[in-house]
Image (cartoon, rainbow, N blue to C red; front, side, top):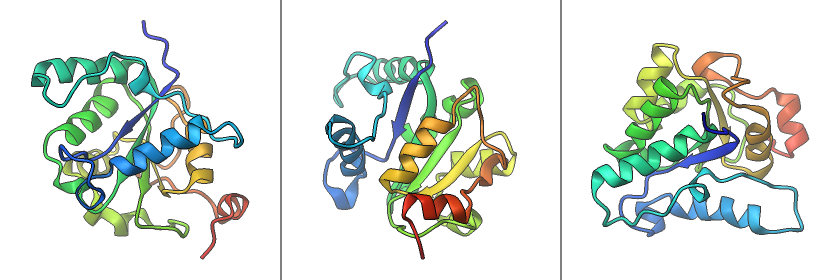
Length: 185
């Protein structure tokens, strides 16, 4: 049995690192926050636990590597940007395995939002189909937050396969929590 202490980060890469076509910059920002020693943001990155796979690797090799990373994860940060719902291969696969196989809670972090998220249903237009389906059938444990360091840090440290979220697929933080994070309207 794998030791599940990592955070798996899923994002739409689109085979590029161009910010307007990909969410890789947000993933890289999370890695930079973790590497910086003068702040409290820490994340045990599941992608660092398995051997690296290049974009040119065969699909089955990449799939095996992603599954190995998911097996070692306690939660998933799903970076949701403008192009996430366009991903029709890896993000849906990652969501499916995270929820259906490994029972990993999802931290849906929205890149276009800087204020508290109080009604995640209105953000449905940004959800990949795999996420929408699992929210609708109440199999996904999801908290919806803006892509902000304090909210991410709290969610990563708080939610895991052993401690899922209340509220099933439409979990949110309270106004008091957002105030503590310094996130206001």
